[in-house]
Image 1 (cartoon, rainbow, N blue to C red):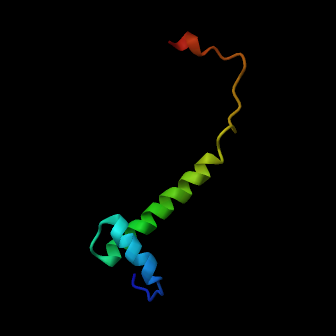
Image 2: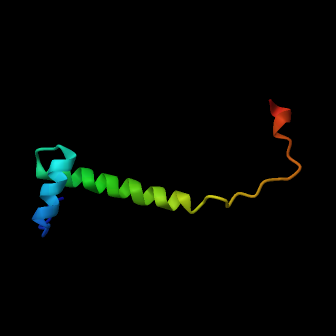
Amino acid sequence: MEANLVIDTTLLEQALDVGGLEAKNETINLALEEFIERRAGKSIISLFNTVEYDENYNYKKLR
């Protein structure tokens, strides 16, 4: 899908330098992938400490 976007050229140049990629579209696609991974990871963190364990469960028994 093609779209006309207004992108801050300073940010794009910094991303090109940091990312080590030569093409702008590759840099933008990589940035989007990393953005999605990071946001998905944050939603997983919200699940921490939400599992209730049975106090009588003997984990050593299965070893």
